[in-house]
Image 1 (cartoon, rainbow over the protein chains, first blue to last red):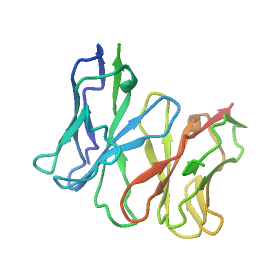
Image 2: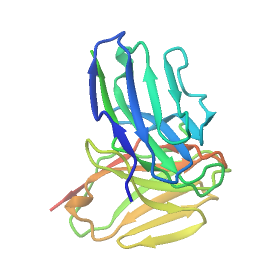
Image 3: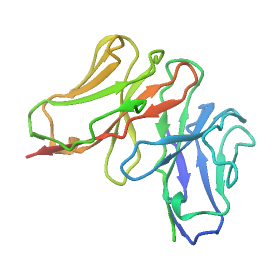
Length: 116
Length: 111
């Protein structure tokens, strides 16, 4: 079974430039998560999708971040414009179901973003 | 107070010893608890999940949960150098599916 796929794996941009990350979850997983992980910290949730609906985006900085999951499968996370503080690893995860206690989340390889 | 707390370490143990990793959480209604292993430069890998009080064993790994004390731990028996990694504790927030992660404990297993 293929795992969560993310691209690109690395991205280096200058501040104020836009950047986009793509994620394809594990087949059959309805719930998709975007996390951000800063160096030395645990991942922090940015947004959670159940199918195509964003059900938790309370931690997403909406002035510059946007996300979409149009057909309920793959998803794109965008930053425009990027700031120096956005340098981090952006992780995508998926689970079969959410809203229940027993949701195991599986992570993709992540995209390491460096903003210069 | 952080929602999920772990000692950042590093925790150093000799090869073959038992490594004990600890985690406390603040949300009393949490129902699900997970341990992830993260090698340097890699993404988190799920290694254990536990939902009820007591012990859960899987190979060399044992997860222990005490909801009354709001405490979860991971024991690694017969530690190997390949176990050297950062171990992240994650706690499910109610029934929302949201995971709250600790900052991780770095484990070093010395040959």
